[in-house]
Image (tube, rainbow, N blue to C red; front, side):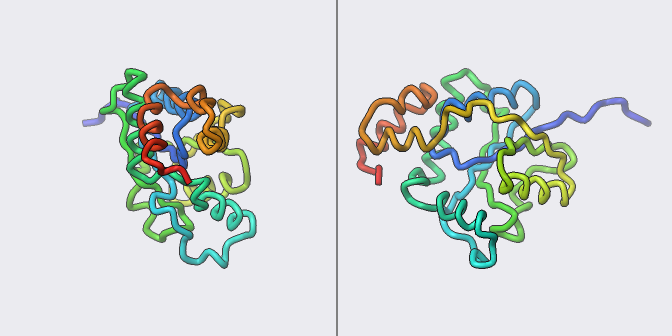
Length: 195
């Protein structure tokens, strides 16, 4: 018997979320408005330089060194997961539609795909802004994923701005992160975790 049922599609996106800010929130809400389930991969879950680093291109090395620097990557995996969940909960998102998992890049581990959702029903949604992103896209397409390139939605908001405000002891960061993220970040600062 032939079924006319259309296969529903899920989306997968990933980022460092150092920390999750209003630009990330806008992107996530956009994807939740379009797809059934959203998988969010947290990049650099172990915050270490991957094996084979010396053989990478200079641009990739530079990107990885920045991403692994403690001042650029201060929140651990668990803290980032909690900030994302608290932010989405505050927005009234049905969290049963959100799955958070560690993200290992193609160049970090040959078994990277073992942590990925099924390619038959999942679109990789990624904002492509530089060659590093296009490299990832080629890798996903090579193994059979569909990729949707999403325009960058909030160019004036960045994790760097949030971190700089936190390190400087100003309150500007509270305007850049979602309301649900504020209590956890405040607790993080109070506990002296800021480098």
